[in-house]
Image (cartoon, helix red, strand yellow):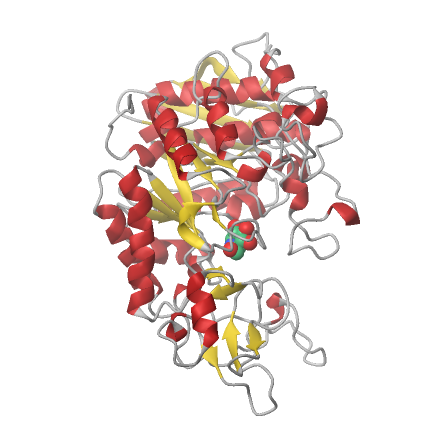
Length: 541
Ligand code: NOJ
């Protein structure tokens, strides 16, 4: 029975847990995680003694795919890849998740299809095929080379020659990921129908992949060299060019709003766009983005907290700036990691992961956690013969952050009875869910406590945000609603830090140090985070 909480606008403050399905849990002994594996772990994800307490899951793509880019190359938008299971398995997952009050967000990949998608196969067959214009085809340049200088995000030219018809097709990522032509209304209609297929089934939202490419320059003009690029070197890497023409084109927002209008046909659904606003001041870029999209049904990911140096000042000034642009109906989407970025624990170091957990789960909006970060999984070393990521250039692949979830100390960390598709971290016997569930001082317990705290605190979920000056090493902010004020104090350094005397603090309500003996302390231990009540008598925000 569907017991899901029907609360309107659940997404405004929901905590989302990203599952990379290949690596979560395998019930089929294939060595690759599957849908039934996610269903089997729903009790872990929901609240309660054995559970984390998240509100929603985002599942990276599970649609039919040759897996050239592990599902980001879709060959059928309305079916499940057999590696992951069946539509029946997915419906069961949806029902079981909803019964636990967990929302389900699917990955949607509108910019490109697999070259094995029937649409592309037709499109590539003859120049006069009705699907020809569903993709971007152009004649070779005079030297028989690619039609323009655009580059693939992964490597090399963004154009691939096709012998059968003597033209090139456009691909912003792998050659096996052909870009759809979003200028063609039939393409837009087909994509909206695919969205409706899953929304009709009861899916709660989408994370929408690579939306920057949904509008491109109609004339396909050459892109300029980046100012720092040495013209003596032939452009090769994506970052050697600026990209005013291949992405973020004039119809981008119109198209995002067209997709958001599909969300609006349904009750209480939401889409989160993988967006990368441009400009010298990225916050201004985000503000323009929010102003142009439909904020009641969509929001852009804010990736900056992944790239900032782990310094209190850097976070304070960025988040202050970002929050100052947020209107009441905007949903900020903060995140500290995903399947494309090195692991959080490896970027900031294990001791700081506790501080990071408190940061993420006490900020306004819809925070996204990445699977395994709750137990502090680090980047896993991948030997050359273990590389699976097609993007892998030496030292650049994304395999290290995609390794199997570490459930327990049994073989393969309890992830599979088969041969895992990527190696399991060497420290899995000590770092796993079972060990950390049994230890009240573990990182996992801290995540559970924070999630529980957040759930019970309207001030954290819905309150205003204002930072306070606590010196160079502490990032402090107040979250406040009509009845409660909380102050969050995060020590970004590895030294103890005194708290400003001017702060009229109540006792510690939650510390990242589980066995802290002094509850009324005037300092933060190294890397410590505290949530405290604030006597508002002499502080207004
Ligand atoms: C962004 C996704 O997060 C990434 O994993 C993928 O390779 C590209 N888009 C292409 O779909």
